[in-house]
Length: 359
Image (cartoon, rainbow, N blue to C red; front, side):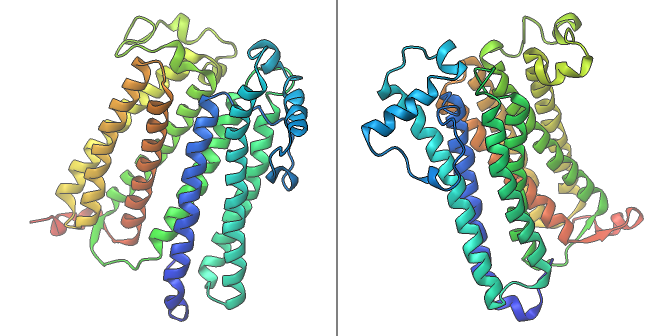
């Protein structure tokens, strides 16, 4: 993805623009997490991509919005008797989340069109960036698809749709980080091919873990099983409790015990994989950047495990839960940067690896 020389001098502006967009995506993820934790996501029951930018401005408008919320199952079954003042609190969380999504669209599209008009973006970047915008537009529709699942028959959104919404946001963010990282030329340091494969596996596992975390959040599984290291009274719950849903596959998405158990087990696997990857990196390459990323990933994963355990034991307080989510985004960032760095290095075939061992 290295740009042509005619576009080199415009790369700092493009890189800065993409980093701003990435920071806004992170802000949206955090505000979205707070919206979920405060049960605010169903407070706005209509999708108005343009006119919805403005919040209620008069008491009559606030009353009308509140009346719409009072018609859905969440109000009738959970928040009956809520005051208008309390409604405003949850409304502002959801409104801020939606506003950030709109801001991201504008901050991405306007500079993108300007850069295209000026001819600053090379051919190798045009389609990836256009694809990012398309994914962002899809994400807006997915957000409403998610919200709509909780407006008629449920008191919360579908965990399937919530996890998909979260994953798409993370994929968009990871793609931005990848593009920015790949703008820098490779330094020519050779690395074994297996390190590339190991880093890719680690990145995929981190994304899968984020998906499982979203399912845990969607099912409120952290409030149901908040002991550690045991879960449901054992290190490994009974098969009858893990697999009682039929057909069997539904347990992976709808059984709160199975979902949280899988989230825990994958965390252990990721930590072990990261430890091995860091050890292998240290003995297989002289590349200080790649070594630093591998070591940092292990440290961040240990911290993330500790935060996750604390979040469980204290029954998912908002501050700890948001810290856990923020750490997941940081882990994803480092995993993407490490993979991008390894992909940009010259590969070493298996039989040649010994000649490139660090001294």
